Every structure is written in structure tokens, then in C-alpha cells.
Image 1 (cartoon, rainbow, N blue to C red):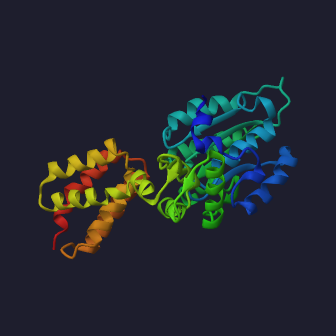
Image 2 (cartoon, helix red, strand yellow):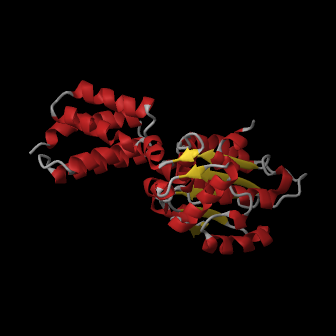
Image 3 (cartoon, rainbow, N blue to C red):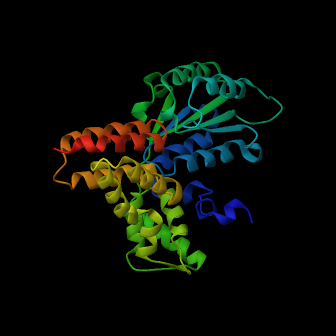
Length: 318
């Protein structure tokens, strides 16, 4: 059985533009580009995670390049390969190659999480975009367009993706449940949406993992989402406040590496616990949380950063 058959997020990934959930304005602007590919500029897709940015980029690749789209599309996750080296080596090499034996309008480079690229890498990318524009198009995908340097933004048509409406997401989940023969407890799908904040990719992954005996319950959703880990987070913060750093770190490692709770969820839980504690200097706590949240967003190592955060917790006592 293939990955697409096993993973619901791939199995139910839209194959055509009219299957994409809740991005009508974006799709209306994209359709003319498909009809006149020679006039297509570089594109910048910006918006929250799980709103269809990568999916639409892949649909575009298939529609514009046809059966050979995989051979003439380079897809990279810039958060994993964010430095200038990858720009100079893989991207420049791919963008610079011209194959006139195939009837395609251009080669396509999709850079996911482009807002994670360093400033130097983005500057180098700008030059490549200028030099290869006759035979290569770029689709830059990001959560925050403000993290993309202005010279890159000015070379792209910008498409802003909206957070998905709750009703449309839940209707999509109901359809998946019907196709998979899965029942769900009342309120469980609403809880899924609230936990994932409209991130459809995360929602579908959580939906699949929360199935227990053919049934999705609020309890199974909470368990799989790690929201039951709030008690562990309270204990972890309590240890840190008491100066019992090793015990606090042990819980952190369990949450990350054994329970599979994301670093974003952990920092949210730490923030929630601290802000509910009257013994804490909340202003100072907010500053520290914001600093480590920023570091994580910039791609810093989760375990190292959260460990460092715990080391500062004791100093937050009034």
C-alpha cells in the first residue's frame, strides 16, 4: 500500500483547483495564468499553514507542465535548506538548464517556507530569478510575507491565503469520515478545528490519528493532540520554579521525543501555565516566551531552546 493510500492528508489532497477548500479569491486569480502560461510571473503564496498553498503550487505544476511535471519541477523546503549554499548549488543549477526538446513553457521551482531562508540566500535568489526568468518560474511559499525581502516581493505576483472557515473545514472532515467509514462523537470535529486553528493539513493528520476502534471521540482527539500534556507541563514548570531543573528537563524530553508533542504546543502550554500563576512576573514571562517563540520560528533546535527556556523560569518568581 502506497503512502498516499495510508496517509489521509495525501489521499484527500486536492487534485484540481475546484477541490481546494475555501480559497476562491486565490483560485479566481490563478485560472488566467493557466490559460496564458507565457505571461505567468513568479508567484508568492503567503498565509497561515495548512491553507492550501503547497497544494495549489503542485496543481499548477501538473496543469502547466503536463505528464513530465516531476522532471521539470524542483520542490524544496527552504526551512531545511535555508542557506546560500543550496541557492548557489541546487537552485542555480536547476534554473540554468534549458531543455528545448520538451514542449513546456518553463521549468518550475517551488520553494516552501521561503520565509525561513537567510537574508543572504534571498539576495542570491533574487539574482537567479533575474537571470533565469526566460525559462524558469519560481513559486515562493511562506507564512509571513514580511520575512521575504522587498526585492523578491517586487518580482512576484502576491497571493494571500486566508485562514479556513470552520464550517467548510468541518464539512470536509465529515466527508472524509464518510468515505473512511468512521463515526465521530458530537463536538469532536469542532474540537479538532479549535486545536489546529484551521490548519487543514494538521487537522486531517490529527483526525486520522484520533480514530480509535472506528470512532473519533473528544477524548481521543485530546490525547492525540497532546492537550492532555497540560498536566505534564504544569509539573514541568513547577519543577523549574523550584530549581529542580533536571526533573523539569526530563518531562520536556518525554513530551518532545516520546509523546510527540510539538515544540509550538509545548511553548503554548508553558505560557498558559506561567500566566495563570500569581507568583510570576507576567511581563517578564511574556518577554521570555516571545523571545524563545521567535527562535523556534527561525528554525532553532527545539530541545535546546526549550531547555534554555526552562533554565530561565526560576528567575520569573516575584
